[in-house]
Image 1 (tube, rainbow, N blue to C red):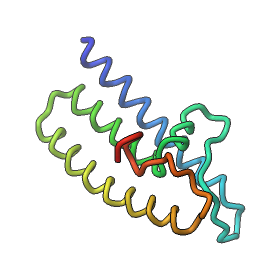
Image 2 (image 1 turned 45 degrees about the vertical axis):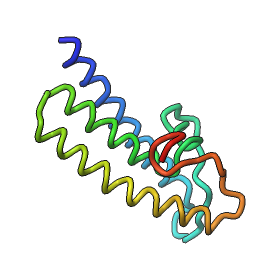
Image 3 (image 1 turned 60 degrees about the vertical axis):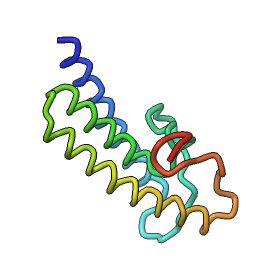
Length: 118
């Protein structure tokens, strides 16, 4: 039961975090413009991951899928999580590289998808 409920809690946190980051992204750009800004956290505590990674939506997505795999104890889900992580890491590293090129004052301590590592 602890594994199931722990996995469920992680899944819910991952999905709420992913949603929160998407809302923050939406709110960063004024309606009808193409203005781009350095992503920063807002008042929602789940957006604080912006301080550590360039693509926290991918980080939260991976957290949700890892939690789902733990909760279900399902090998195909774990394989899907691994493949999904790889693809999201490729996207995140590309976006991270573009942010650093576009914004000269982009925070150097941020990583692409995994805080402090990748």
